[in-house]
Length: 269
Image 1 (tube, rainbow, N blue to C red):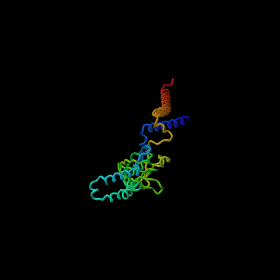
Image 2 (image 1 turned 90 degrees about the horizontal axis):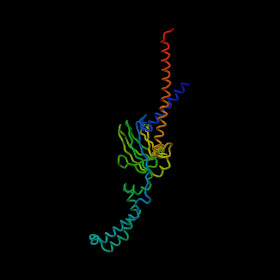
Image 3 (image 1 turned 180 degrees about the horizontal axis):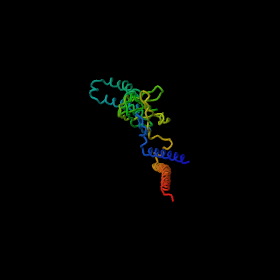
Image 4 (image 1 turned 135 degrees about the vertical axis):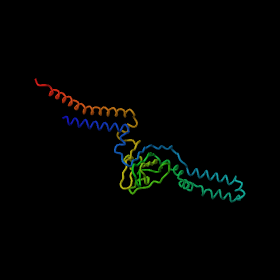
């Protein structure tokens, strides 16, 4: 019976001690792999109607150019009145229509991002590190639309399985990449904790630590601070109970052994 009590106490001590390490934030260093991604997920709310209307931009530019044709002295001296009118009626509508303006905006990366900003629903931001040489490092992120690595925009690629991936190339030991990824609507229907993966060539698989996701068992620990103290106190009590259950039998055995040694050392009458 004492053996089972000891085994139970050891299990309680180990479980409670591991739980306390997790709550204190020190468990992430236990058995950490070579390649690791630490990411934070945040919602990306966009105001309704926010963006740029290509039709409005085209009309504005056409009006401005039409005004310049009438007010610019050099143009008035160079072009005849009939020619200027033809430019207003024929040339400007063809150059400044909504299709042409939208194509021009899509060709400019910064404007293209603003045009598509309504498609962004989440962001994933964090660091990717390695303690050893890792070649052809890639991070798969479902629903990714735009990505930055160390403050610079990078191109997203599609894997053979249809997943969207961010290629980081070769990484030296101790190298750190700061990544920011904007996700679309597809990311709302997937479990990012299971679908975001990091790896490298030769079958190297890294670990992804993700904060900010909702819906997992115990997620309220992040929102309700008092619950962390409650769990911490329960784990501390379990830890002390298990430790006491281990120490008391040892102390009892030592006291019994001491008494027996004392009785044996007494002279026989």
